[in-house]
Image (cartoon, rainbow, N blue to C red; front, side, top):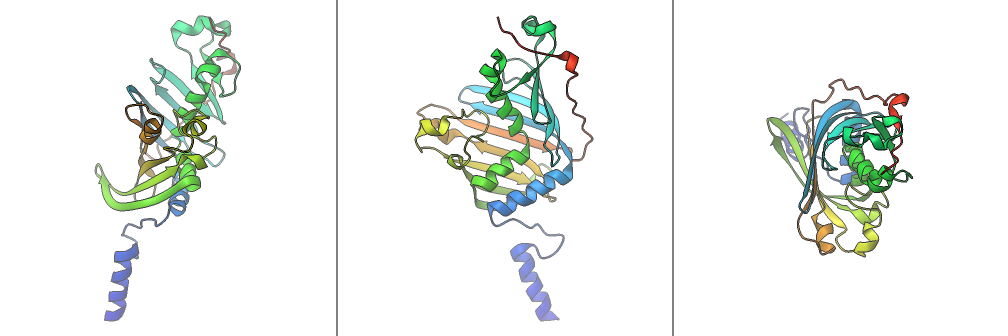
Length: 261
């Protein structure tokens, strides 16, 4: 009996043998798989996001619903310099046009659909950036990036505010992501960097159910490799897991096309 107790104690210390102990992951793929499953099981959450690139800083907040068919979210961001509401539903992104610009939308309608490859002026200027921004608030996207191009460097048990948490330190090789780059990086970023500054740090905090609490993606090495000053960082925080969330497609009669000028 004593021998069994000693063996179990050793296993608990090494890997969380007991149900009450934290079980931290030993590699990036296992971490990404478990956190992705926990995100789907959590169904929904509220989030805040901060994006910093050099002297540019933007803030956003919203709520998201997670499903195997895709993430739906609604958020407000000042990414374009004034409050802008975005909705991502059924893999389509919609933006609510500020009142002062609705004379540039067919019929003066309040919503436009935004696409990275759209032909309208709004999509051509901001479609790629806004799509990246909205999708980056989906933890599943970041976890896919970890699964594809991540390496786990270290981890520890900690607290996130008053919540017991697992804190993971990873690196992500952006060159392995193809066109699925984080918000703020243009599709040709890797070609312009010529292989320099492509590995960036990522920190991830999970709760005891392995649901994301915070992620911090540090893109500063990209700026440094490009010879630009300052920091570049994306921080997303998640709370209120399981809170009911409704995200609806804007009514068809309220969606127009931005014509410009």
